[in-house]
Image (cartoon, rainbow, N blue to C red):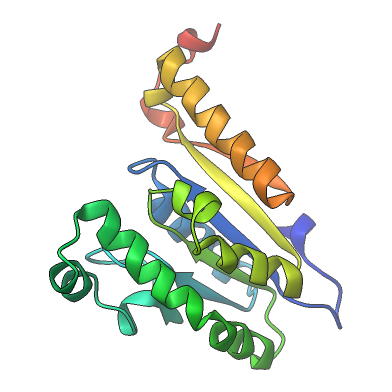
Length: 191
């Protein structure tokens, strides 16, 4: 976090956390929130996962406060993926309001953004405008969370890398790989 800190007079740093479903994005973000609080950094947390039931951190801005996953899914007769994509697309139409809130916030060091596991949403749909608007307004980086135990399979590892590179090339933003759950995997598979 110290390396991402921007000098006084500059904008907050936006850290968008993405990754496959179940990779531990929300848990990783919770640890980032704890870390930033321990260092008295000022920031906002934004939840963009409309289907999450509970959050292990307090969100300053939460998509669930404006778009209701179950109502949208029922109203438009959507499946689980469409039920996540549609609320995000609706939220993206009002994202200028989120940008304004962050711009008006007093001296934020960072904004942490939690996302749903359907990462293709941000690369191949209207919801990608969320990343574009962040990147055009604030210094923005992407953290791609990899589930290390699942990546013991070469196919899953390569799928993760292809997704990560797809996001890197689509957004043209700095991208960090965060290998999560390393306490649950043996290192020998990587040798």
